[in-house]
Length: 319
Ligand code: AKB
Image (cartoon, rainbow, N blue to C red):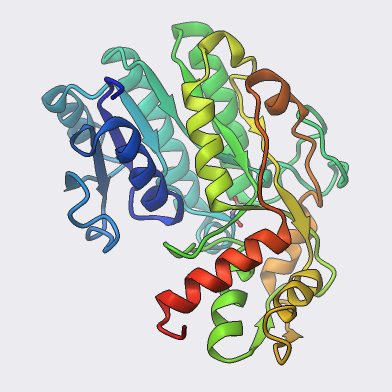
């Protein structure tokens, strides 16, 4: 068993639930402290310690770290792209404040490592859309993207100036069946599976040919842990790594679902999220992650669709 005490801020979100469960397997359940401002997620109950803790409350976080002897922190609390556009100032405050505060705490408390996610949302309408490179034109068009790009620069700054071992990935849309996403532009790619099973039809808020980079959650969790476990000298980007799995459109995802549910049908009613998606890359070049610390994805659209439909059918008691 590895000797780390890990604090997760935002453990009840889409990534947090699965990451907490995976880290508990690796580090021992009592060494992974799940926290959130919400009530404990049902899948976390009985799997290890849980506390209510606000990712914005620096004093409470510091006290928690001292009391429990925490050595690593994962900061997953954030407002995502779609929710952020409804309240830009709040998104900026939450996303930036929580990170800057954690970077300071990391210096003061001499944490071993911290993890903070970035996103493909850092790229904008002027970025080349195909095979978007690790370093390219970056002009984010959403407050979420602006906060993530500014955050990446702060991570790099704290690493250079204070030696903070901060690591980060630019997540694409993440697709999972255990815990639900909330407030993202890529969320259609999760909702579609629920509706395919329950109603055999779905209305997409993105148009049929909107290609976006996506990843199955199992890959995202494994990649996150592999990044965090890689020797420090292999982490050459202290901003954030491009991180890719697959790319598809609503139309292509519909075809994949129809292989299992032939009667499934889709209609399209693009809303304000279409404009956000139009500003994002269609595919990502993650060569740096692959060569620096050995990233390799496993799931393609077919394998993911098999897993999603199989597991959701059981979860929804339709199997
Ligand atoms: C969102 O859609 O906002 C997120 C993301 C790509 O970071 N899923």
